[in-house]
Image (cartoon, rainbow, N blue to C red; front, side, top):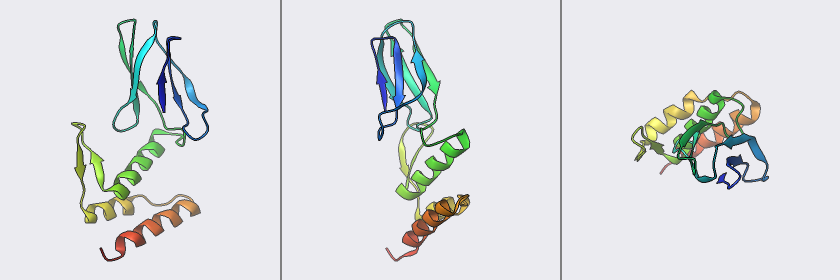
Length: 126
């Protein structure tokens, strides 16, 4: 979740815990609006100081850009929807979804178990 504030900052928050993620996103005037980009990697803010800024952010669950990209790939493979470069939503076919899952080799035992359950769900008849 992202919020805009009259204290000249925007903040990214963990929705589950209410804890802030990272440092405040600072402007020189009241922040009037804040929103995530469609891919979830950036926050766009608009301020009374007349500036619109784009901030790189990582999700609270992710320690790196690579981990955030893996999470986005998994979400796209499971949902079957992808946000294009033109910020529109497009559907990907079942075969491509399985290929995306195959590229996401589990790094931990828990991750491997989750991916295997998802693969089995896709393998079952539609």
